[in-house]
Length: 293
Image (tube, rainbow, N blue to C red; front, side):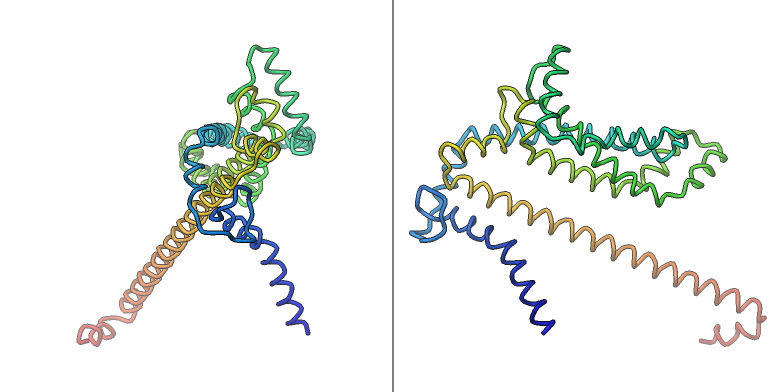
């Protein structure tokens, strides 16, 4: 009974996850001018051609990529700085500072967008891509900071102290010890920051001024005239996502295999060294059979 319940749950779960994607993909190749998978009236690639001819969508995609790259650079820098500060701060104000730094996560995106626009407009910065980057980075950097703090909880600070005792500068310690330890988290935080930026709507719509991003463009199309071009774009994104996931998995397995080979080589070297030491301790008589072999 339990097995049937688990299997039924898995079927419902995967249907809930993947059926909308399947219908969306089918609609991208269906002839009608509105997104629909049923009834299927004929296979066509017309909507992909319409998509590639739509200059507004591709301009929005470019803007989203520019904003995403800017947010990654800013959020990684701010998040890493905040994490290093909080993990090394031992005063009573650490809890208060932590609450201040993570507070943007609890603030509605609309409030962040409006407050960013008002503040930077008073300083002469108009709405646009730069302001959108600043607005998004206010809360995305907090996500990155939490990731870095979780990683730094497992960091052995004695390594830094030993390097400093041996004459290394603080810059050398950071680049040679701390940063290599944080490298996997930097990649994870960068991916998270980019995805958060790419799909953001509430904060961006108030800060971007007369420009537009892909999310804003799709929202406008959904209100006015939604066509299967959107489905065609989604198919392209799905393909790119699958390619990226496969590439990352292949890279991960290659690194794992390389690490296993390194461990095996180290074990063989240790075994050979132990055998050599044992032969020397037992004297020349023990080495003669080995030489004969």
